[in-house]
Length: 194
Image 1 (tube, rainbow, N blue to C red):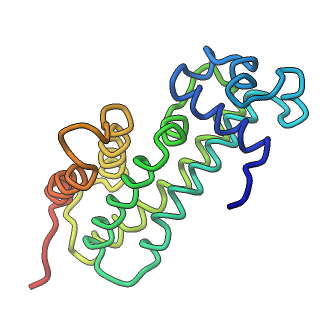
Image 2 (image 1 turned 90 degrees about the vertical axis):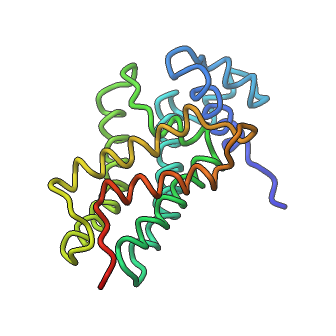
């Protein structure tokens, strides 16, 4: 197994702390302590705390896009793609909750440039969902009035899982996903082919 780099340890520590405490409440000293490095040497690996935030968002965006992108590009009906996308999205959240939480939070303590860059990364992922929703509308499989609002509704519901889901809770992630699938199909007005 490859050994984790010092930079990776720092980024992972930052993700955990930002998710637990928030960006502003997390100090560079806190990150250094959790990562096992001296605070003064932290800057040999990072430029700023905001750069760490953006790296976390970039890596999480890659995780989400890497899980959902191939589904979007695959053959098959859009309703089946949406089902698979929901499962893939929730799996990413389950496997890396801290990263997902940082990715999903639009922290107002960040500079406008950092927030803008993070929003661009999230928007790129959202476009994948828009493509499949539009595909479903064009094929007569989904009955929606506004695909952007529908996408916002679906992703808001899915993203909320990062705040309340606990693996040791009464529902498995698979059970949560199955319930969400039923609800999303109702929202989409899924029409099965004749």
